[in-house]
Length: 429
Ligand code: ADE
Image 1 (cartoon, rainbow, N blue to C red):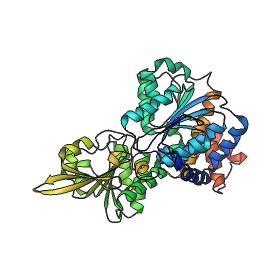
Image 2: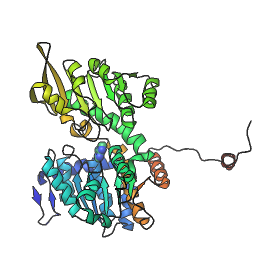
Image 3: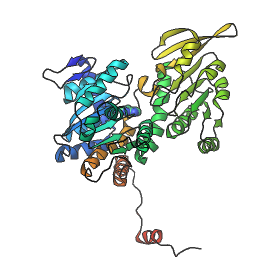
Image 4: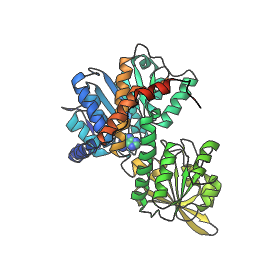
């Protein structure tokens, strides 16, 4: 429903869900102490006073806490969904009703609505943007070139988005400074690894109730997300098979003790599949053809391109929709018999569509980094050029230090002698 009277202009599913959303936002806040410290400082210093911001992110309880921090810092924030299936409608309702933030997102929105929401975010005429997948920034460049000069800078949350932005920069098409938040150590070593590892298994289990112990679990891709997923699937008792195209990562997976196979071989033996590659058609016709009856196929990469759903549709003699929530059965004919391949969440990111995304504790680090990177962009705007920037080292250190403190962990400091030793070259054998 569209709301504007007496409230910020918004398009959300149902305002009456706000009470449940507020509880979830508050629950997540308990596990986001670093972001709370950032929010408290922002509330005092108002670094974004009067600034228009548009954020195209997954609309979750964790994102809601990021929105609260930006809002407390004085920003006029608008939030739209970065994926049609990841919106938590109750959270969206609470953001509008309880926190006065404009939200344009409804779980299950179709492509047309998704893009109309993106358009509204651009028509907000943002001076700072945040993206999860680079849809907002790439649309500004393609369809609203006259607005490019109004944008001081942008933050990017995910690997896929950073890859797109680097491709734009390579072609000379990027006209805005962007910060690759994804590439911060305080982001990818934790969010991509432990967040994806846990939330992806959570999504697969909530959707299917599958017992992982003793199953062949195929992880496609061994970046940070794949490493985390493989590690957690092994912890649940699965026999984990990794597929890769990068020889170094494949070697790492092999030496981490996983079986490494080409997808064609893995397809024939896998019980559960999950893609986390950032690439297209990783599981396709030739793989579906050799899969076992009952194979479960899912994706946890940003876009719904990793599983060749078009191939699956062509191969199926029929589709049994919604055999469980977030599960469709594709029925294929196999040697005069039928076999079923279960596709989760239409091949969209299963951790957000079938579960709640990464837990708040890990998003605490990613979203504190986002908020501080936005402040950094603003402070450094005169020096910035239209290219992809790394997150400032001081931000990484601040986030890691505060996170450790919140966990009650203390670490050593270098002694004067150790500092001098590290700075010298003369001492050796
Ligand atoms: N990406 C992965 N998990 C997320 C979450 N909980 N909130 C926002 N973005 C996410």
